Amino acid sequence: MDSPLNSEIESFFDSAPPLNDRAAISEKLKEFIALNSSESGTRRVACVTSGGTTVPLEQRCVRYIDNFSSGHRGAASTEHLIKMGYAVIFLYRRGTCEPYCSSLPDDAFLECFEVTEESAVQVCQPYSEAVKRAIRDHHAAVAGGLLLKLPFTTIFEYLQMLQMIAVSSRSLGPCSMFYLAAAVSDFYVPWKSMAEHKIQSGSGPLDMQLLQVPKMLSVLRKEWAPMAFCISFKLETDAEILLEKADMARKKYGMHAVVANELLSRKEQVVVVTNNGKIPVYRDKTSSDSDVEKPLTKLLVDRHSVYIKDSNT
Ligand code: PAZ
Image (cartoon, rainbow, N blue to C red; front, top):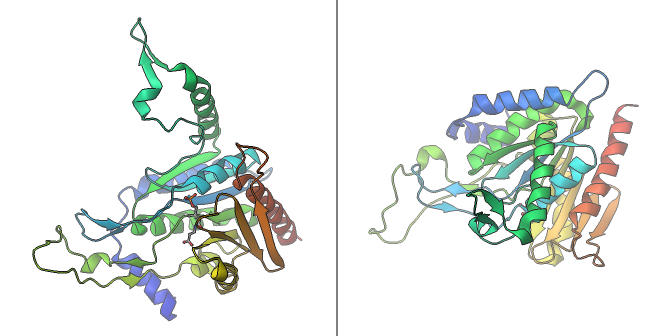
């Protein structure tokens, strides 16, 4: 690793605070990958990233930079991928949407429950079917070894965990998919130059320089998981530049597809940008409980099938 980009990446990882539970995460990954690989046939495994990373401004963090991502895209896509036979490593921002929770009520958690005359706890009637279904589907996916949930908060945790997942899933070869829907911070404060204690407000305006987070997509493609099928997402607020930026990212980072979406319409339509065309994908508006993630994941799974077939010939 001696290019300027690689030395930026090295210095990002060198300066990152070590992951608290690295050994436990590594063990979980090892078990999950082993469970889904067998001599009779490896299951396809997708790493779905979801939600936004934070950028701490202080080591004993009181303040941080955040972004809008709700994690809905990642959570819904995970459910569809599992339905289509994938095992999913769900790398998600703590506190954002999780798979099988989207049909649960938005009401405060405690409003869904009541205490019976016999002092048992039960789910209030209007919610009971949705809660039962969510619990059943979630527990079946986890117990069946089809869903591994790994939470992150900061950009440091996210990138370290992504690297661990990519390197651990190398043995899956082309059966591995990266579906990178998380909104990843573009700028950060290096840990070593970060204030340890809460920044004081008495000394006038805050003057702080943020470094650019090195782009890890090309290193993911070339070094961490060179055989994996990789899909990244591109979000813009200006529809005029969206498709061009998505295509630039596809070429620059060697992605197999880039999903282009615009902030306000992202739940209704996206465009999948590939080397042989731009394919618009729409939510089925005739059904109120449909989502755009269903046709999107179907299309990408079909592309992944072709990729696996081509890799094996
Ligand atoms: O998490 P969400 O459902 O609210 O939004 C999904 C999304 C817009 C974060 C995702 O589709 C996406 O574009 N992620 C990459 C964002 C980026 O360009 O960094």
